[in-house]
Image (cartoon, rainbow over all chains, first blue to last red; front, side, top):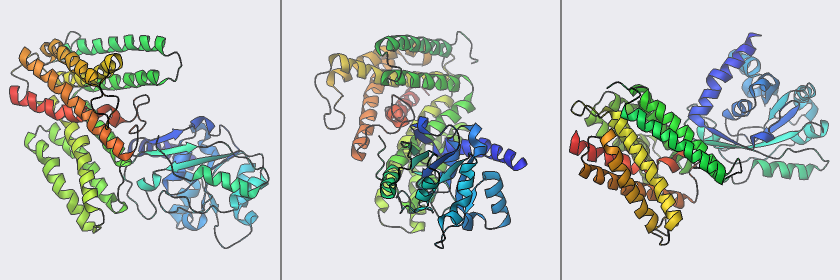
Length: 208
Length: 308
C-alpha cells in the first residue's frame, strides 16, 4: 500500500511541479490521450524524463493504472533502484536483447494490457541520440497483433533529450513539446503499421 | 506608504480591470468563435493582469519572485529557440543560476552590483566555464548568443524590479510598485495602440524586412497615444513634471517599438513566427516582454537620473 502512497506523493510533489516549472511540457491534442485502460502509449525515447512526462500528462485518476515498460537490465540493478522502479514508479520490467521470442520478452506487458492497464512503451527499446528517432524494434507489432482491440496512442516527444540526455544527471531547463498523434490500430500489414508509427514519432518537429 | 482602496495603484489597477472587462465584452461580440485568437488573447491578458496585480499589491518579496519568474521563463524560451551546444549544458545551468542572484542584489538594494553583475561578471565568467570544458567549435557563437539572452531576459527585465526599491522618501505620493505599474501600463498600451492605429490607418511600411505589419501611421499613433497617457497617469504614479511626463511617454513609445522590432528580427533569423505558446493568442512570453526589454532599462535610467 505505501509504495502507492509514495507514487502519488512523488508525482504530485516532485514530478508535476518539476515538469511545470523547470521543463514546461506543451501537450498538443491532449484530447487524443486515452481516458481509460487498456491502452498502449508509444513514444520516441531520449531521456529518463520521457516516461515521467507521459505518466504525468494523463489524468491523476489513471496514475495507478499506468505502467511504463522499462529495461530490466537497467532498472533492476541494485536493491533501491529495483524497489523504486517496480514499487514506486510501477514499471513493467522487460528483458531486452538476446534475440528471444516476443512472448517471452513482452509477456508481462501483454498481461498488464489484458488486465486493463495503460502501458507506456518505447519501441526504440532504448534512449537514443538526443532528438532523433532510432530504429523501431518489432516488439510493438507483435503486441499490436496479439491485442488488436487495444488502442495505440503515439506521442512524439520533443526537447526532453536536451533537458536530461542519456549519460547526464543534471537537468537543464528548456520548453518541451508532446504531440499526441491519431490513434493507431493493427490492420494486418506489418510494414504499413511500422511506417505510420515511425512517421508519427519521428521526422522534423516544427514549433509552430 | 500602506496600500488602501484610494491609493493611486489600487485606483489605476481598478481602471485596468474595468478596461479589460470592457475589452472582453467587445471581443466576445466581435469574435463569436470560442477559440478565436482574439478571445485567447483576451484570456491571456486576464492571466497577465491578475498576476501583475497580485505581484504589485502583495509585497516586495512576491514582486521580486514574480519578476524573477518572468526572467526565468523568458530566458528558458530564448534558450529553447536558439541552437545550443551539448557541451554547454553546465554553462547554461550557471546562466540560469544568475537569475536568483541578480534578483537577490535587488532585494538587498545593492545598486552597484545589480548594474554590473551580468554585463561584467557573467560576461567574463560564462566563457571561462566554456573554456574549462574545452569545446572550441562554435565558441564565439555560443558565448555571444548566451550573453545576448542574459542581457535581454535577465539584466534588462530586472530593471523593472529595481524600480520597486528606488528610495522614495522624498516623494510621499510615489511608490516603487507605482513606477512599475506606470512602465508596464504604458509599454503594453503602446503596443496595443500601435497595433490599433496601424490597423485603422496603416499605409506606409516602416520596416518591411523585419516586421511587415509595422507602419509609420501605427508608430506615430502609438507615440501620440502613449505621450497623452503618460501625461494623464504621471501625476498619480510618478514624481514627473509635465515636461518629463511628455519625455517619458515618448521614450517608452520609441523604445518599445524598437524592442518589438529587435525580437522580430531574432524570430525572423530563426525562421519562426511565435516564440512559444505559453500565452495563447499572444505566442510565447518573449512575444509579450519584447518591448519591455528596451523600455525597462531606458525608463529606469531616465527616472533615476532625473529624480532619484
